[in-house]
Length: 224
Image (cartoon, rainbow, N blue to C red):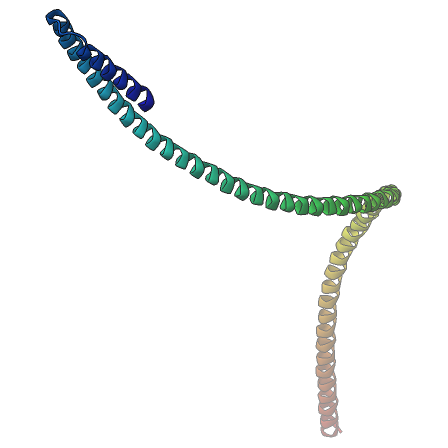
């Protein structure tokens, strides 16, 4: 743009020099003045435009420089972020590999434990079935024994009732025997009393007889 501006100025100057070399002409001078004024305005406009373009170019270079710096910073930031992400990705991938290996080991262990538990469960189920058979037989036997015991209990109840009847009869007889015993004791006491009275009466009678004999003996000499 600067080379184009210098070339245009040189053309204007050469045009003016050529005009000055010709014979003076008032009309030409007036036209030259108008042209010169117009050219000066045009030059001023070109200079103003050149100045504005220089400012714009300077601003564009500044913006471009800032833009390039920003681009470089962004590129560096992207590179750094990419490196960080790559490192984090590598770490996560390694961690995932470790977790996957651990999970595979756990799955293998769980599968083995499942197989063992299934085998144990099958064995326990078989044992439970056998125990269930034994328990069913025991229950059947116990039900038979319970039926037998119920029959025996019924029979024992009948026997107990018979015994209670016998006991009640014995209690009645015992009460009668007690009454008879009391009466017997009373009679025994009465007999003893009668015996004592008899003995006392016999003793009195004996004493009276002896007294009578003595009195009779005592009266015999007097009569003789």
